[in-house]
Length: 168
Image (tube, rainbow, N blue to C red):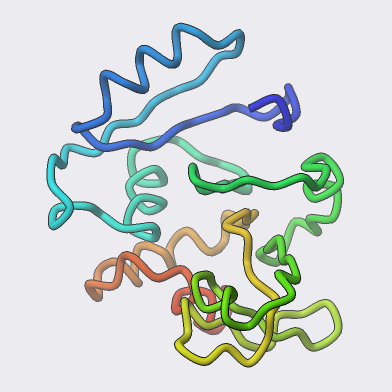
């Protein structure tokens, strides 16, 4: 939390099962955090990564780019510098060279063409690269309708597949 610049609103997504835990945590921090609770109690009801983003967008008046950091994400880079690299038009993805293709298979794996992601595979069995997406993204508002369409097709849990769509 301390890495997130003070001028950025923090919203945390959880499900009904962990709602009380997050509200208890919320009382212990010295920062305003809004908690949005998905009305699910079991794994098979979960909305998935893309579904959760879509849930936020449909339930909150988000009128600007959306910084998304997965809750199980640990990183050491300067988040302010990451945000400063956002051009206001294209999705920005934090990428890290984990240095081991075997370990990379546990993450979203990317291949770059310069500074552009040429390929994004979600947890591939045989990664082509050791560059992994760190579950830290900035999505421009223009892709919000694409998230909705993606979810309407029943695809809710694979940011790698969503990222491969044209115009994202």
